[in-house]
Length: 174
Image (cartoon, rainbow, N blue to C red; front, side):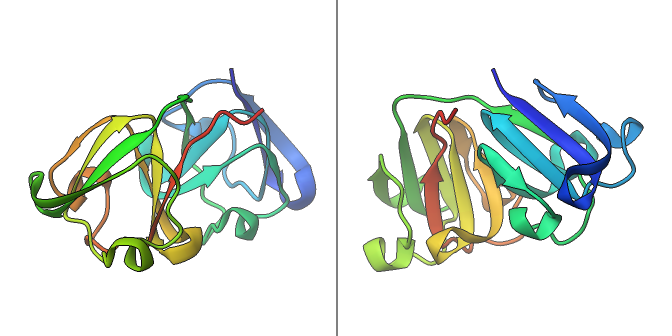
């Protein structure tokens, strides 16, 4: 079980709202969010309702302002608890619809280019566990949650392009 608390003001001040499960529209609870405390579980928070817009991966810890979770604004409109898994496997393909050369990973990769000479990933198959795909190397840039399933095109995971820099497994952190 996870636990996350959203605060309207920086440094954990102002009105707050606590969650232990997914919520598709947090606007009823607060108009803006400037700090977050994650007590347990791994979470993805979204800038728009219904799990849309910019995505931000949060592990247990304190985020005293939105820059600490790499946010571009104080907009947090939905959140989901990411299920944990003890095993992770993901396949990256050189072409859309799981075609062409394939690379399989079971561990974090801080630089897809350094490891596999990949700077773009047109399609993905997540076989086990959840993953976070980062637009840039070393776990920076826009983030995308990848749950088990097929992603035949980068639009399927919410990206505007196929650029990819790094991948991180979602681990069960308490």
